Image 1 (cartoon, rainbow, N blue to C red):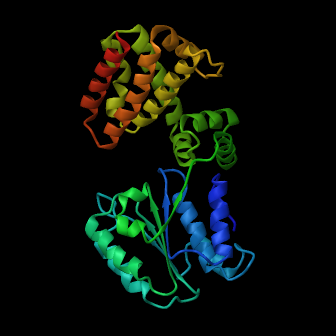
Image 2 (tube, rainbow, N blue to C red):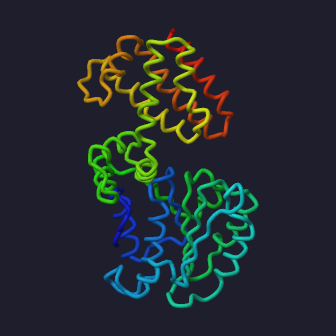
Amino acid sequence: MQFEGFAGNAALKTALSAAFSRRRLPHTLLLQGEAGLGKRTLAQILARAAVCTCEDRGVCPACIRAKAGSHPDIRIVTGSGKSNTISVASVDEVIRDAYKKPEEADINVYCIFAENPMPEITQNKLLKVIEEPPTGALFIFTVLSADALLPTIRSRAQVFTVRPPEESEAAVYVQNKTGMPMEEAEKLASLHRGNIGRMLSDGENGRAAKAEQMAEDIANALVSGTEHDLLAATAPLIKDKPLFPESMERLQLLLRDACLLKNNVNVQVSAREVCDKLRRKLSLKALMALCEMTAKYTEYWRRNANMALLVTALCAEMKETAGK
């Protein structure tokens, strides 16, 4: 199989290629993993392989139409409305269509992009067609976690976990795709731990540099300033909500590197001066607690917390933990 545009995940690619070559592909696949890892890209690659009519996959008319998004036997189902979830109406349409004969291929393929949680009523409708699937139907779900689906759906599907590629591979991929300098691509790969989707988004809007500067300002205020200084350093996060999780990621990396330096681990860090300050001024226990705090407040952010209250609480807890 060809996995053009989908980086890393060598073991996953091998398993999927073997399943296709042996014609042992289950009727329902669940591709799980965080946003930005290429689950939708992989789902569409699998859909193209399912309708392919030649051994040299990727060059037949069916593959060409599938890649262009015009193959009649591949359906893409996405969320809608404010919640961006799969609707009952969309599922009803899938069920009606699944029992029809494919127009060109030997199979109907349904790529169901369900990254946002689906209501139980919607899942129960899907369960009906997955329990007793029509002959010649393949369902490919993309989800953040299989645990977001009913156990009855999970038990009838094969789950594959999509992971970030190695940071070095991610940097090369983004550099080749965008033409950005390798040094910048490597910084993005480190910041986002190889998540290519986030790297590309960050590179487009310049948010990486903002997040890096924000994290350094917060770290400096934490070790050298007052609580007022820390509030001033974090104030931009109140108005720029998307910057919050990226700044927390970068701050976590600084704290992690400071922990390593405090344990006398010889590590190359990009913001050595800031990490040295953190190492000298804070205890290992405080550094580790602050690392956990960045993750905790990022989770609060995901729950759509009020930004002013979130940032204020973060500053107060960081100062208390740092003993300032």
